[in-house]
Length: 233
Image (cartoon, rainbow, N blue to C red; front, side, top):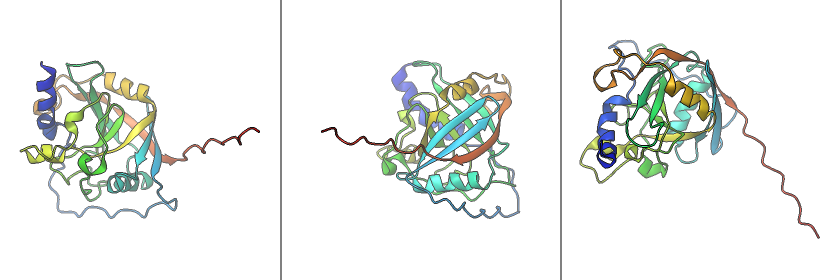
């Protein structure tokens, strides 16, 4: 496949691809968010995603994507993400490998999912879809809840394109952090076995079998700034 065409087509495909499984219709109201932990949010919030294949440490960019990060931290502090799974590995056949993403989340679980978060496009945040970035999964803009992807490669086609004619391409997807340790674990998840039959439409063949379980997601302390030595006389 021609790489230019593939990148241009990617956002159209991912409108269907990166959304979490649609929850079944229900009359019950969404659960109220638990109070945030006492620790305030600085410009960067570090979290550790402990999976059965190892730990992925991520820095969430509160300075540039505050609403998206605050939403994610509500799930973390409420321990709502404990027990979720990485359930999808999208492999793209073109470009340098690995090329694609892995996706995790609650998949619309009505017991744990909170109210959707307001969309923060990359045209507003100044962030971009680079290898190692975290990006919110969604259907239409403003429908993202818990599900997110970790990119194994650069995917600029997922950035907001305000000049595009398609509303979804105009909005793009919301980047809100990056992996700082554990990309080897993300690669293990990406390399995990996939079902040849599970998944609907273009997602067929992308679903992990079995899914990779997440044991816990917790805030962790940022490293202390390095001491600056005084100038020598």
